[in-house]
Length: 142
Image (cartoon, rainbow, N blue to C red; front, top):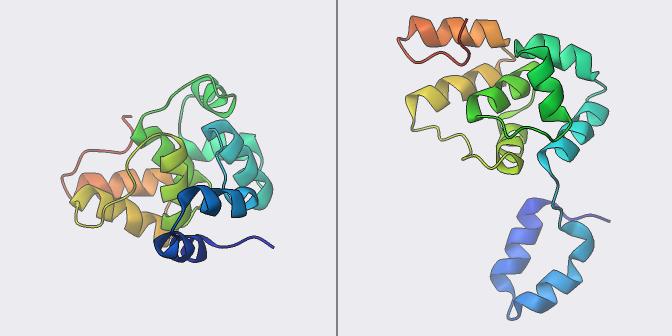
């Protein structure tokens, strides 16, 4: 049975020996590449790569390179994929982690708009329009 992140965090905070914690939780620790995590999300959400790429508004060739693990995308491009996949803010934070970027920070105005868009399942274009209305940098350039 797998443990959720909160349970692992609790165990780690109470652990006397990090090596024992790591050994005891070997099956609960995951280290995915961005491409592996994207493939996992596609399966979990029953989405096709083509659907996500279309909805992301990213260049198709570039997006295929991201899914293939051949590109290290910017934070904005990762967020475009998150919106296209209708991820929750928490799922998006994991995606950002695997892409090597900072998680969403609600005290940042731009990040707050992205979190709002994720919570409300806005499209990439709707999110871009909302950012522009608020005089914030767009998620994607047109």
